[in-house]
Length: 91
Image 1 (cartoon, rainbow, N blue to C red):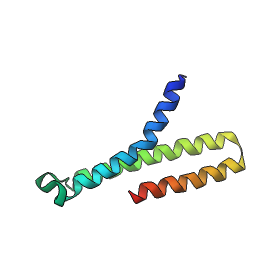
Image 2 (cartoon, helix red, strand yellow):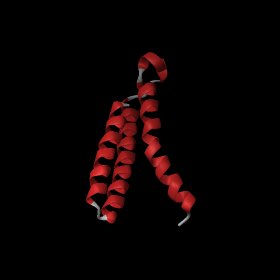
Image 3 (cartoon, rainbow, N blue to C red):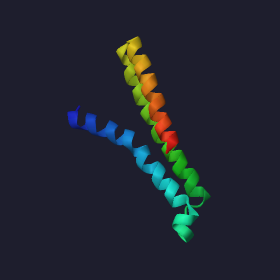
Protein backbone atom coordinates (compact mmCIF):
# COMPACT_ATOMS: atom_id res chain seq x y z
CA UNK A 1 0.00 0.00 0.00
CA UNK A 2 1.03 3.54 -0.58
CA UNK A 3 1.89 5.33 2.69
CA UNK A 4 0.47 8.58 1.33
CA UNK A 5 -2.94 7.02 0.70
CA UNK A 6 -2.93 5.43 4.15
CA UNK A 7 -2.58 8.92 5.62
CA UNK A 8 -4.83 10.78 3.20
CA UNK A 9 -7.97 8.65 3.21
CA UNK A 10 -8.51 8.42 6.99
CA UNK A 11 -7.81 12.11 7.47
CA UNK A 12 -10.34 13.02 4.79
CA UNK A 13 -12.97 10.67 6.17
CA UNK A 14 -12.53 11.90 9.73
CA UNK A 15 -12.78 15.58 8.74
CA UNK A 16 -15.65 15.23 6.27
CA UNK A 17 -18.48 15.25 8.85
CA UNK A 18 -17.09 18.47 10.32
CA UNK A 19 -17.49 20.07 6.89
CA UNK A 20 -20.81 18.51 5.88
CA UNK A 21 -22.74 19.17 9.09
CA UNK A 22 -22.34 22.98 9.08
CA UNK A 23 -23.01 23.13 5.34
CA UNK A 24 -26.21 21.13 5.72
CA UNK A 25 -27.24 23.19 8.74
CA UNK A 26 -26.71 26.60 7.16
CA UNK A 27 -28.18 25.67 3.77
CA UNK A 28 -31.29 24.35 5.53
CA UNK A 29 -31.99 27.60 7.37
CA UNK A 30 -34.64 29.68 5.57
CA UNK A 31 -33.47 32.80 7.43
CA UNK A 32 -30.04 32.44 5.82
CA UNK A 33 -30.87 30.96 2.40
CA UNK A 34 -34.39 32.39 1.87
CA UNK A 35 -35.83 30.77 -1.28
CA UNK A 36 -32.79 28.55 -1.77
CA UNK A 37 -33.02 26.67 1.54
CA UNK A 38 -32.86 22.88 1.43
CA UNK A 39 -36.10 20.99 1.26
CA UNK A 40 -36.98 17.94 3.33
CA UNK A 41 -35.49 15.51 0.78
CA UNK A 42 -32.05 17.15 0.87
CA UNK A 43 -32.09 17.43 4.66
CA UNK A 44 -32.79 13.70 4.96
CA UNK A 45 -30.31 12.76 2.21
CA UNK A 46 -27.58 14.92 3.76
CA UNK A 47 -28.27 13.51 7.22
CA UNK A 48 -28.05 9.96 5.89
CA UNK A 49 -24.80 10.77 4.11
CA UNK A 50 -23.31 12.18 7.31
CA UNK A 51 -24.50 9.12 9.24
CA UNK A 52 -22.94 6.83 6.65
CA UNK A 53 -19.57 8.62 6.79
CA UNK A 54 -19.53 8.57 10.61
CA UNK A 55 -20.40 4.86 10.55
CA UNK A 56 -17.55 4.14 8.13
CA UNK A 57 -15.18 6.05 10.40
CA UNK A 58 -16.29 4.11 13.45
CA UNK A 59 -16.01 0.78 11.59
CA UNK A 60 -12.41 1.43 10.60
CA UNK A 61 -11.47 2.51 14.12
CA UNK A 62 -13.07 -0.56 15.70
CA UNK A 63 -11.57 -2.89 13.10
CA UNK A 64 -8.07 -1.47 13.59
CA UNK A 65 -8.19 -1.49 17.38
CA UNK A 66 -9.55 -5.05 17.47
CA UNK A 67 -6.58 -6.20 15.41
CA UNK A 68 -4.16 -4.89 18.06
CA UNK A 69 -5.47 -7.14 20.90
CA UNK A 70 -4.73 -4.67 23.69
CA UNK A 71 -7.26 -3.74 26.39
CA UNK A 72 -5.71 -0.32 26.98
CA UNK A 73 -6.14 0.54 23.32
CA UNK A 74 -9.76 -0.65 23.44
CA UNK A 75 -10.46 1.76 26.28
CA UNK A 76 -8.56 4.61 24.62
CA UNK A 77 -10.39 4.09 21.33
CA UNK A 78 -13.72 3.99 23.14
CA UNK A 79 -13.00 7.29 24.88
CA UNK A 80 -11.82 8.93 21.66
CA UNK A 81 -14.92 7.62 19.88
CA UNK A 82 -17.14 9.21 22.49
CA UNK A 83 -15.28 12.51 22.10
CA UNK A 84 -15.51 12.29 18.31
CA UNK A 85 -19.24 11.53 18.35
CA UNK A 86 -19.89 14.31 20.86
CA UNK A 87 -18.13 16.82 18.55
CA UNK A 88 -20.18 15.58 15.60
CA UNK A 89 -23.39 15.76 17.65
CA UNK A 90 -22.49 19.27 18.82
CA UNK A 91 -22.22 20.43 15.21
